[in-house]
Image (cartoon, rainbow, N blue to C red):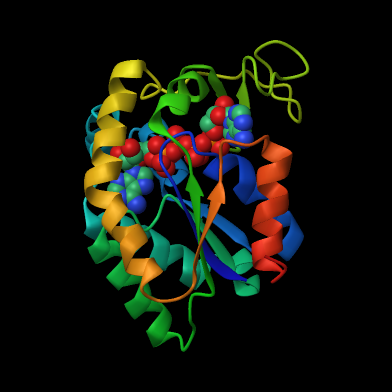
Length: 217
Ligand code: AP5
Ligand code: ZN
């Protein structure tokens, strides 16, 4: 499969993507997770990116396009296709992706938008807990881990993302509506766009996503 998942912070991209990966045996490329791993390693890019991420802005198009290109070329899991989570989030990134796929004689098959009102996102974001190494996310109320503050799979500690404050969320939402809404319009014109109501229970969102990917919608 070759698809993108698009939606505001907290819409459920990182919750749904691993299920798609498992179902279709493709790679899951999340630019936010890749950037956070650079931050954790304190690389020069990581130091620069952390400031931008904590302020709810966007890292430069060239950097994230380069990261995706690198994975598509070298990550063997991507031979079975890919699901992109959090990329593209500007029109130049969408054009960059088109160019990359064209060079490989491939086409994007699905652009799925997770649609949800901003008002529902504050609770999701401020209650989120993440396992940094895997990117797995939990929620204090909506999806609690089996043991408090521990990852279900590895038992390692869960943390809160430094950009998961109400204040940073407002900035991220502003950036989303300004820079990423035009990306939705970009895909609506191509005919591969579908929207899903992301305010539903995670299991129902998953069912709707799968119906789209398997052509039952
Ligand atoms: P990124 O990591 O992509 O963050 P984001 O887009 O803000 O999205 P989130 O990860 O916050 O939300 P999600 O949709 O994955 O939600 P989740 O499933 O975890 O990017 C971070 C930053 O990196 C950006 O701000 C930017 O600075 C930079 N960056 C990244 N990509 C870039 C790019 N391409 N270009 C430039 N800069 C880039 O769910 C959230 C919570 O809700 C969880 O606790 C979950 O358990 C819960 N939940 C999920 N679904 C449901 C449901 N249906 N009902 C109830 N609760 C639910
Ligand atoms: Zn995410």
